[in-house]
Length: 203
Image (tube, rainbow, N blue to C red; front, side, top):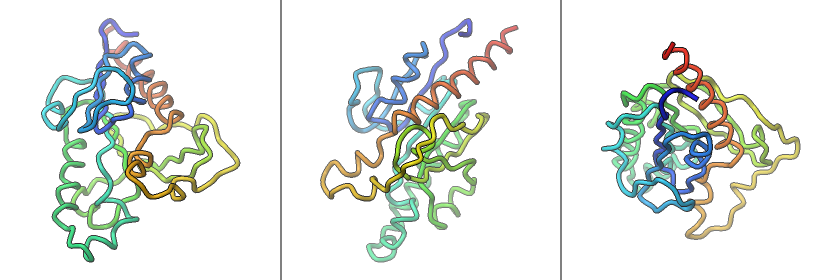
């Protein structure tokens, strides 16, 4: 570890999975969401925006994708959701534009209208089956000063389980929860990367 305790903010996370993985590494890890955390730990309830201005070493963000993802583009015109989409894209941009040194922002593949507002292309696409889970769910990562995540455990048998979830009040929560394999990879790979960088800078 470094000579000081490193700090990470996990934005829009109610599950507490990514936060807990960093806590296990000895980081000062906090999550923030409008919902309470499902795993006890350091958690802000409410709007994350004010916390983006605080002193963090790493930001990992999971901003809402409902109005940004390609799978829901048809509803923009049918339900006149353009303003909600614009607000969602601007909220996404706040995470990318923060002054925090290391940043990772996650979202599904976006439609062209969101991409036109955000302007910054994603860095890589990952899948749960690359990290020990059988599901297929293309997930994009926008990375600043961080390396791409490397596969940790490729699963050969794959299923579209995410799209087979029954409708209900828990569906959106289940679909947005980070897989444990991905959470652990983020903490192990990015945590190690930043720790080594900080050790080099302290010499």
